[in-house]
Amino acid sequence: MLYKFKSRATADLIMLEANGRQVLEIMGKPPEAHGIVTVEQIPAAIAALEAAAAEDAARRAAAGADEADEAEEDTNSSGAKDGVSLGRRVAPLVEMLRRSAAEGRDVTW
Image (cartoon, rainbow, N blue to C red):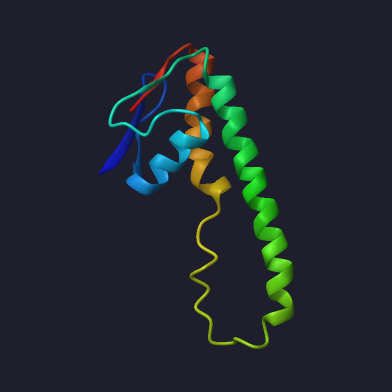
């Protein structure tokens, strides 16, 4: 399943199910097939997403410091565990929410 976020203020934003479910849970929304973030709810949603992204960045930085000590032990690592940070993953949605708030438009999925 894909989540397709829509707003009359921006182009559509499509996320894979796991990522869409994660951002909906962060915003305090049920991960259902359809839903809405009203204009009144947008500031809280943005704050929740930014706080989660900052927490993820701090956790990655701490893990990176721990792994720096072990880097020489595993030189054949593919780096797949690094993945995409939550901050990068939610950035398009945060921008959509900001633009939607500025134009007084709800965001649906």
